[in-house]
Length: 114
Length: 109
Image 1 (spheres, each protein chain N blue to C red):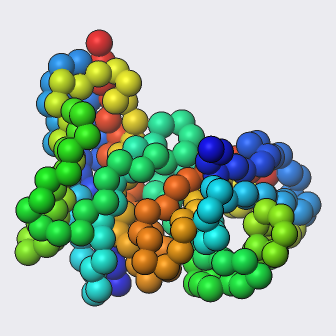
Image 2 (cartoon, each protein chain N blue to C red):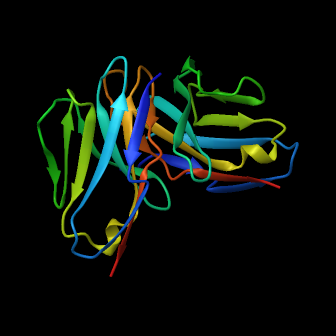
């Protein structure tokens, strides 16, 4: 019974490149959340998605960041033209749906921008 | 604006000690409060609290919520080195979890 899967676990990008982070939710979960954790800071909500829908992207920077959760395949968090300040751990969590407050986290992707 | 404040920020104890971690909060529409343990990777779920005064317990860990005074505590008895981690408190928002910055617990042998 696999948990939330994220890949890659570590990603190094040069400034200006694109970063793509993938998340496969836990089996039976149709709701996906992305969080960012900067060094020595808490987890900050970015975006909440269901299949083919963005429900809440209030925590996502307006530029360069986008997220999707297609009908088939994993959820993708895309960061275009990365800058040093994007270096962080990006965690994905999933839940069964509305009314379920328990979110289960993946191992995270640690993005380093050089 | 919703707020979650955890204290202490960090704590160093010896194996066998008992620790109490605090989480106070301000929220316009309370749904639930969750505790997570974060070692070097994914936060792992510990407890979800929705009602005041009802203790949740799992082994040496227990937690309780006070909705009148707006805080929760997480107790760990007979601490072990494997308890070393960051303990995160989070409020459930409409569509997300709102986290505190965590308490870093270090248990030394």
